[in-house]
Image 1 (cartoon, rainbow over the protein chains, first blue to last red):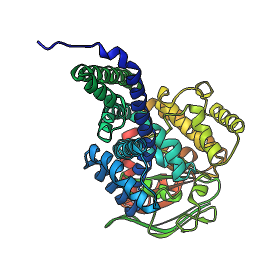
Image 2 (cartoon, rainbow over the protein chains, first blue to last red):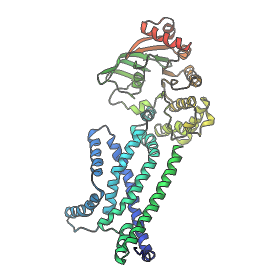
Image 3 (cartoon, chains in turn blue, orange):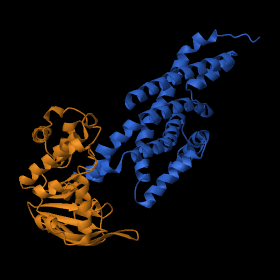
Length: 224
Length: 244
């Protein structure tokens, strides 16, 4: 039977913690930017102007048809080269920025669809009532429709955030030291890869499972 | 106050309004009735520009509703509208429902708007419910809040789109009472309703619509004593016998 050796984990905890901070940073930035940008894209997609709506549709369908790993690699390998050629300076290491941008843009396409569905779930009568009171369509959207839409979307947005949190482990392909990357490298170095991966998996599980329990409780509260 | 001149509207091939003409002067109460699908709701929504029309002209207080340069938001802030399904804002408290447009559209301060809102809630007899959310109120109460919300904008005219048809029978009276009060205070009103008791009590005129046309547009007494057309007569006999 395989002999587990957990001894290297306590020593690695400070590094793992730093990695977790980075993971949470990437998750947080992607959630905030993703929701803001996603809302904008959802609004464009619902616009009556077909140029705007088809541009938004292209964005959403484009990102949703590409594996996240590809997007990450593009923003790591191609975009810096492209920019350095553009401004005539050598490429700098922008791995963290690449990760932020790639996740934010990628998540925006998923959030956009959730938000679009949320907006459409608010009855048209609400927007009519807001217009009838003299609100502009922007005010009606901002003050009346979006607050109701977001309230209904909270469980879905959080579920997407949990998926995103797990997906951040993919940044190991660009060699960024986030939680999974650090676990992997430490395990590799000490010859305890199996233990480290199991430990990392357990951490992902506990956080994700805890968060989804929270979502379920919240869902129950929102429904009542 | 409201002048509707040869208004026609199509949904694709289907013509929903056919050359509709009528005038509503200040202080007048006009009841619009007719079978469902007759275009009455569409006509009323054309008055504040919630529905667009392709032909004809509607003047509201001298402003052309259909003209390109017209600021529709500004015009709508002067016309109150009450919907069949109330359309209160469920994420806002009752008092906030009454203040939000005052603050955001008319630029009133929060205190002024709240005072105005509370006064109107008192008028519709709902002062005790100011801090509740709409879902905690009955249908009749919600519709009275909706009327108060429209009045908070100090409208010069009020449009009602079947305000009592989504209500349970025992709640209809409390809403009609508020509307009667408004009418007797001199509010200009255009009311889609099948409540002929209301029409008899406060209407000046009754408009009967069918298939997108204004078939009759007559003084209340004439309309009830001798409807001029078979269509109106049939309609009246149906709704009156059903209610008797």
